Amino acid sequence: MKREIIIACIIIILIIILNIITSNYTNEVMEEMTSDLNKIRGQLVSNNNENLEDSVDNVIEKWKEKKDKLAYYIEHTELEKVELYLYEMNSNVETDEFNIAIQSLDSCSFMVSHIKDKYKVALKNIF
Image (cartoon, rainbow, N blue to C red):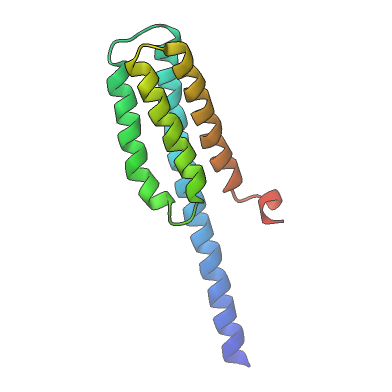
């Protein structure tokens, strides 16, 4: 009986530790994405088209790198939505349709903040 209690406690502790690690990583990635998207939004609003395509490409590359790790514990559909909005924004920037690019960027920002809130360690997310 003692052995089962010890094993159960170890498993619970491991689950809590892994949850904290994944939550921190998710928060870090989403904060970085939010910051990058806000910079791009500033460029779009101020019509600063210089290096805009490079900025968008850099954000897409960062997302591809981070998405692989996030895919272990986050729903794939949510990650795919972020990627879809990024590519949609990229296409609109390439065709100089900046108003539509801003809409895609706003949708992407919403999904990023939604993922951040959904996977945050909070009482409302537990129950």
